[in-house]
Image 1 (cartoon, rainbow, N blue to C red):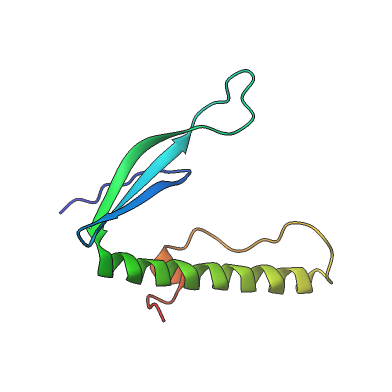
Image 2 (tube, rainbow, N blue to C red):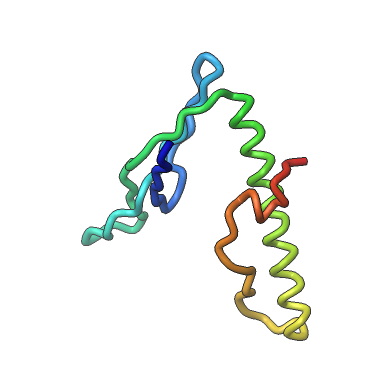
Length: 102
């Protein structure tokens, strides 16, 4: 089966109904004159059973923790200087978490 790839700037909505989770992905629209808040347009939807969603949430939480640890290590390597930390490349979520959720 061929994989389909979608780009999203963020998750814009999550709904749960009858143990099925629907996650709406969206892209940020170009700012319009006078707008102060970014506007998003839904571009794709991920539909999954609630158990799969819970597993995915654990994997994402683990990935965020690992990225935070990399940022701390990068800051320490720079001698505690202020600024943005390099946190690594574009590893797939399974690689970033070791492929397992805890």
